[in-house]
Length: 189
Image 1 (cartoon, rainbow, N blue to C red):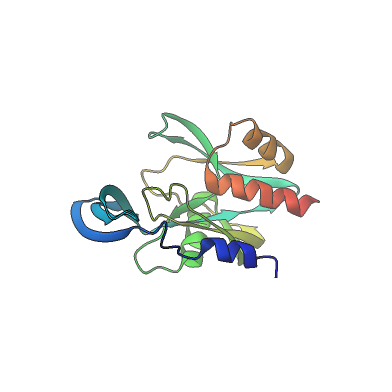
Image 2: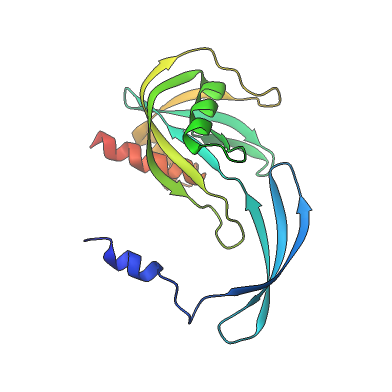
């Protein structure tokens, strides 16, 4: 099978594994919590790690008439506008597909007949466990949008090839959107 090599490379290897010796809870926020860890590294010494624990998110790739549905919004962490697929935070214990469906409808008013899992994105595995589940929407219909009260977004439909070009030019950097762009480009082939 083609994935055997990758599975072998992903197995724990004692030459590289770090073992958690002590965890200190540093801070709880509304979206994530922060811990510091003392870890024993393979040579036996102790190292320090800062870890962000996050419930994760879910996003939806919607393609219609050769265009991808994107949400245009200002991201204060980047201090600029972004173009992203519709997405949001998973509530504790929530099924990612339920989150994806909810966020799709809230942000865009679109309702999907079916959501097909296509990928999982881990944006920064060096310091966070955050995972974003990405779904492909089939059979979408338009309904009224209802963004959260503090969410100011605009829905735009951009041709797939333009989104891919924007990704390659560094204009679209959001990981879930990059994955979705290349997935959508594969649909067009």
